[in-house]
Image 1 (cartoon, rainbow, N blue to C red):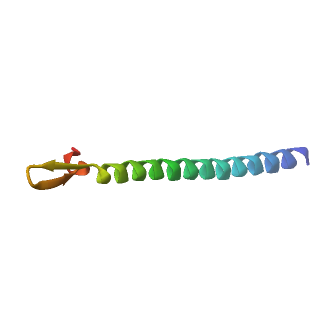
Image 2 (cartoon, rainbow, N blue to C red; image 1 turned 180 degrees about the horizontal axis):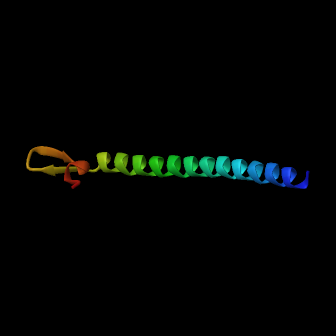
Length: 62
């Protein structure tokens, strides 16, 4: 009986750990995507005038 309880507790903690890990990873990915999006929007605002043709900053990305 003790072994059954130990196995159930182990698997319960394992599943909870996996779910928490997925949640933390999703949140970190969302924050990174938002930060990259804000950086890209900042590049769009940078306007460089080369002669008569306006060029956006993102056009210089490699």
